[in-house]
Amino acid sequence: MNSPKRYSPEVRERAVRLVIEQQGEYPSKWAAICSIASKFGCTPETLRAWCKRTELTQENSSVNLSEHERLKQLERENTELKRANEILRKAAAFFAQAELDRKPN
Image (cartoon, rainbow, N blue to C red; front, top):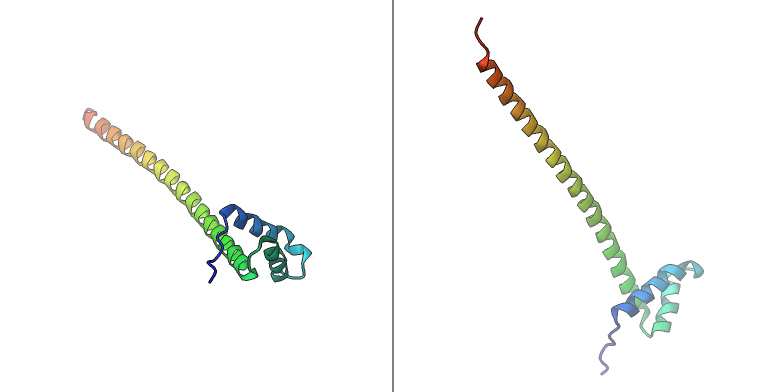
């Protein structure tokens, strides 16, 4: 029994990129996958799985990127609010001390 072929990440990326780039030249994505898979010596189902995995990875990375951007925005906002609170705290202490130092009439 033959052991399954192992394809390097570069070969997988190239095959997936070809499917993405050339699927418009075929009647369907599956037709593009079948044609391109034969050129790389893998089964269409293998190439379809690589394409699916790439799509899912890209979706997750875009979600993570937007979550990361949102987190950075909230961190900046939090820092700004802490500064504003510190200014208000110092101003309140200053005016309270000024009120105590004032001479009674």
